[in-house]
View 1 (cartoon, helix red, strand yellow):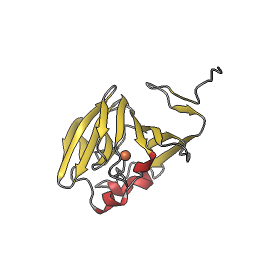
View 2 (cartoon, helix red, strand yellow):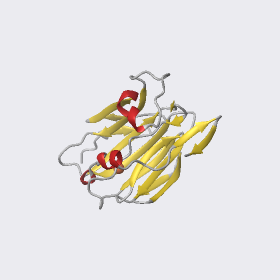
View 3 (cartoon, rainbow, N blue to C red):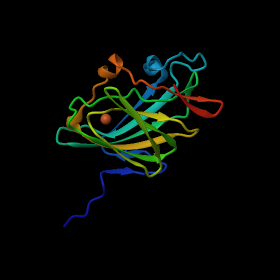
View 4 (tube, rainbow, N blue to C red):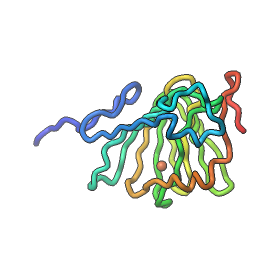
Length: 178
Ligand SMILES: [Fe+2]
């Protein structure tokens, strides 16, 4: 029997996903500016808000693995957040797990909205019928892992049409929901 090296390494606590077929992209402020209530003149358009690593989407892969690293940035006092999405196929769920930092995982479905606290070791089963968004409420990088079926896909447009109904701010060091 041949004993092989793993194709990928995910150094959970302080690393990134490395190895074969790792996709990486960064999300600059200019790409997410419109999801925030106000514009922050102190941020340059190129400010990197968050980064995403994932095992490259190959045709024969039905389960995907990823890592999101959200930097501790606020936009006119509003906490750094992902765009958020529904799954194109709402029958497909996803698992998120907290790796570092602190934040929230917001869920939204019709008139229902809630958030779960995310921190090192927390595990979150996301029912595919909920839209989901990550928010960094801490003062360090917020790192969250994910595992999801390729079949899930992403629907960002539904969020643009009907945004999350609650915003999360950090004012005088306190988290404020509005
Ligand atoms: Fe998802």
